[in-house]
Image 1 (tube, helix red, strand yellow):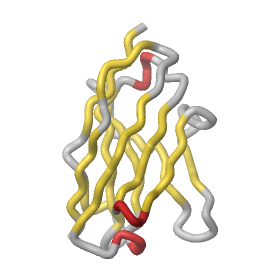
Image 2 (cartoon, one colour; image 1 turned 135 degrees about the vertical axis):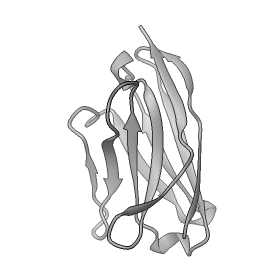
Image 3 (cartoon, one colour; image 1 turned 90 degrees about the horizontal axis):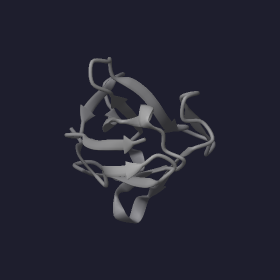
Image 4 (cartoon, helix red, strand yellow; image 1 turned 180 degrees about the horizontal axis):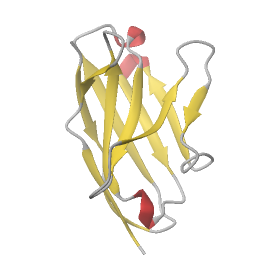
Length: 117
């Protein structure tokens, strides 16, 4: 099992930026495949993005493509979600998740991002 802790959420004005962090423990971090999700009030959890499991690429939801960037620091056991040009519709609780057992099995507690107009 992987333990995940997100941080970095907060209140920001539209057009602003935030960087979320997800720190993992419990497994060798370089072997952990992770992804970011979000859940807005009254909506289902949705995929935001993830790094490719090989080849170094990344995949993003169309709604965040060109504005959000995922990076990783294996020395710090941390993955980052840089969010630029934030919009009110980006308001949500953001989660990181780790792949295990053929699904996203391990989840962090989430961090709230609120974008004011």
